[in-house]
Image (cartoon, rainbow, N blue to C red; front, side, top):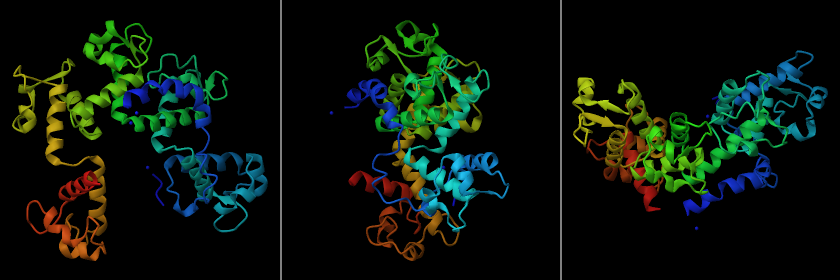
Length: 386
């Protein structure tokens, strides 16, 4: 067990705010289909650090007899009923021990659609905005936040403040909705930075008069879906996602371009002076990314470069990750490649990407083995043909 883990786009985005405010509290509940399904096998739950941390906290607070487990009596203090949790009591001791508590918490977290990043962000925002350090975020404390423009919908019980659970659930819901729209973390983070850079009147939005300060062109106002003459965090995130996909960038490409700009843009004007790049980079294809010939490499030129590289690679981040896993799993001799014999030993059938009959078609450099890039291209090709 591991302890660590976007009829059209425009129309769907227009209804985002309405949907959130009208139904968000109901969406905080567990998946309504979960109750009708067979209970999840506790041993199939992939535990996250947040599950382990929460289990430890429960033990610290409720293990009154210090026996490193929660008894039936102690469960009652938690409001937990043993007969509903018995499946997590793997050793049939009548108590729930540390790892069994973590499994119970992980089971609920999965039903709520929460991932580790939601917890990480909730902790980060609490540390940043919790002025009185009471472990909660009042709506007053969050007036200057840039991570969401749907804050009131997070406050499920309408008490004017967000508990840690309300914050995590709200962040999880927004993340899942952004995923449906094709908005990734790099787009959301980029939108927050644009608002921090360009918002001059403190309303946490970008209006037409603030576009220049944010480094944006007038045409981005087409993403003003609710026609309020301003761009919110979610609208800016959609804008950045659209631009990223038009350029053929994956999230890792986008983050790589931004990291390079941060590292070499010494005067913070949004461009890199090509002549100031290290010789190794200047002599690489990146050094030739100055398409305008002005001696500088702008963020857009960097993005175009990485988009071109991505198209030449022919696979995305998901394909790359899957390829690496398959090779690691079947690489008997440890050379980070798969030979025909290793593909045969994998037991893959003829429809699998690891079928030995597919080696010749995947082996781009004709060396008789498959490395992860070749496998990733094959996975991408198979995905497009489905």
